[in-house]
Image 1 (cartoon, one colour):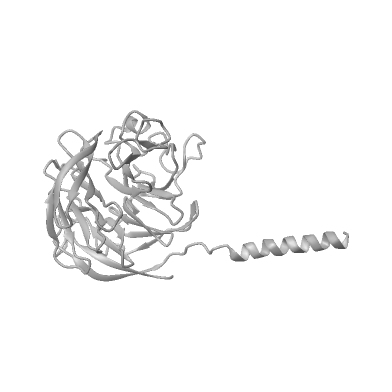
Image 2 (image 1 turned 60 degrees about the vertical axis):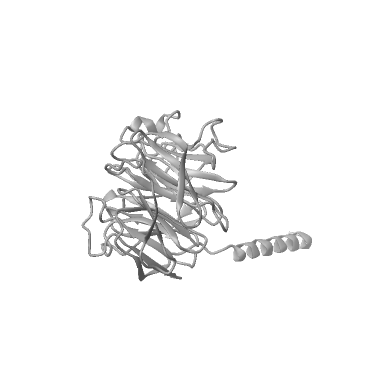
Length: 354
């Protein structure tokens, strides 16, 4: 090889080596530690959304109440009641979301009514909830698999996770709002740029979506309940079909998108709430009665690691706290758990590098 060519090759290799050295290290599971109890005496808490001052609004599935929990912990205070709530089975007052900004004037709630599941926009004056207006109606309702996840997205959009209410065919029916992840504007219309023009449907082929969160790159992730073989953590793509009820878990079928992570058997998970902190996904598990940590490596994931197995019972909601760490809510009063003294409760979880 000529000297000039050798020099060029050496320089190119040096650049490649530099690029490799500068690549960020993939996320590793953190050490999780139980902090103090934030509040107790809740009745089937479901949704949890933080306000600008670090306090949180929490929905109670069966009572239709929304309470405010102080940032430093203490007694929850009633700030409103969604009177159109018709709780039965897994339905009731479910997810909550607060729009960004220093002084939000409204919040969002997902609720099961006498006729459907719907998304409400509720006036908020900083102290109490006011008038509620339905911005999206007609989401199928049932005794089970009502979905309920809400997540505020970019450009004043709202993501909504729904279930197929045990009518499996709805998940593949694009005209139905059941078994989907929806994307709407704050006014409830299909968001601009949705994959199916004029439709709120963002992805389909889901069984029951109860957790939504973004990673550091803005990618959307969702938890999904399996039937018998596999619970799922999915990376959501616009227009993607996630296979239910044709497939459960990983199938390597080019027509459908496989989960990035699956748990088998479903007894170890039943994944509900989802939070992502420093590209580690934290999955609150009901039947599994543990908090799963999943390191995210871009569009792939590392090995899940369990924490708090059987320590608190059933775990429903998990949220990234503004001051760091997590708030984790139990679900032992939901009719399927065994309530312990003080249940249901919210506990603070501290995170340290593993």
